[in-house]
Image (cartoon, rainbow, N blue to C red):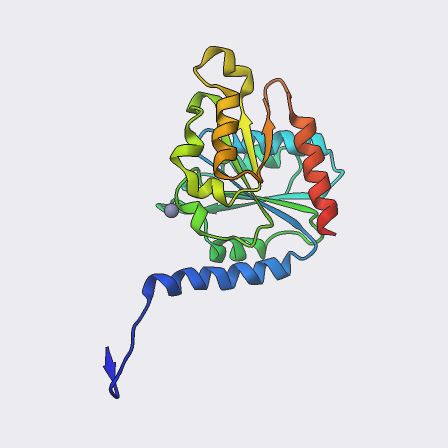
Length: 221
Ligand code: MG
Ligand code: ZN
């Protein structure tokens, strides 16, 4: 566009991303006293089950809340509500990720004084990586039936994560998944990641996960 002899460039994509960043920064300020985790995985890796187990194990020790992202339904929200945890559902329709604007709107309905807030993103390992939601930490889940090559195939999302949770480890004897290989693959992309091997079925590894959350919560205060 030429205006008064000056060429104006309109960086459309950039401005959309900046706008998300602006809202995310505002959320970060608002959540000064809340530890916020953005939980990301493929569909079916067990995000909601991990949250149910987390609620059970925290047992009120920390005041927990969940923002639940799904294309449709309140099925996951209802599962978490059964544990006495406040949940705000976001239905994205055709949207394959949450953005900061959706989360900001949902956050208006959260009760005050939350210690730890989980944002369960839409099941997708691609574009959620590009949208900051005002979180402190990003957690990636991969379940054993999905394959140990996941970190290599989705490096972008692993690069920005603070923790990598390998879930459904009780199924490892029945599928072609090497936990060691998955860990090596992940650390090759991001060596700073905290690693967890858990089963929400046998409760294996959940104590370590809970201890990490409690520790991170303390660091935030
Ligand atoms: Mg879910
Ligand atoms: Zn998307």
